Image (cartoon, rainbow, N blue to C red; front, side):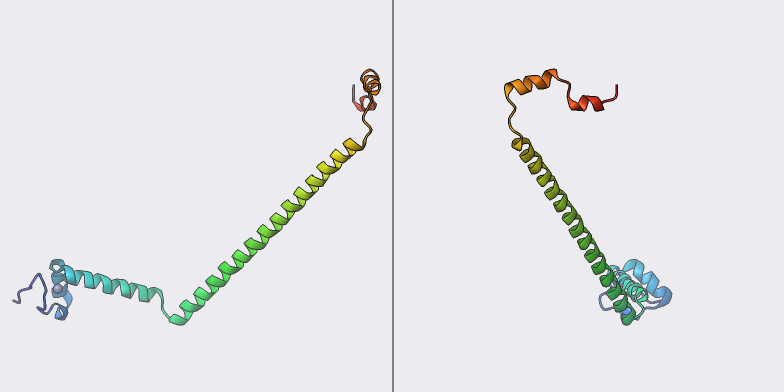
Length: 128
Ligand SMILES: [Zn+2]
């Protein structure tokens, strides 16, 4: 029977097949690593059957991602536009209210006192 060199240095590890190879893989770390690497490559090749289909899938994926990014960007732009419009409306409402408040002639002390004693016009609108 052939003796197996555990170090495997040039003792014909590559020529082993079948059960002898499996027995050798238990002992030789280098061959075990090479066999695992080969198995990983084979598994990757099985997952990607052809270059053409893989490239087409990648292009479709990239196009989908780009479209989603563009949609998200336009949605954000629209939201920013609405926020800017709301801010402008709020600013002009505050400015207009301030202007209307200042435009009214300042009440004299007598008018202010009359306003305190006389019922306000809004009081008639309140429910009792
Ligand atoms: Zn070996």
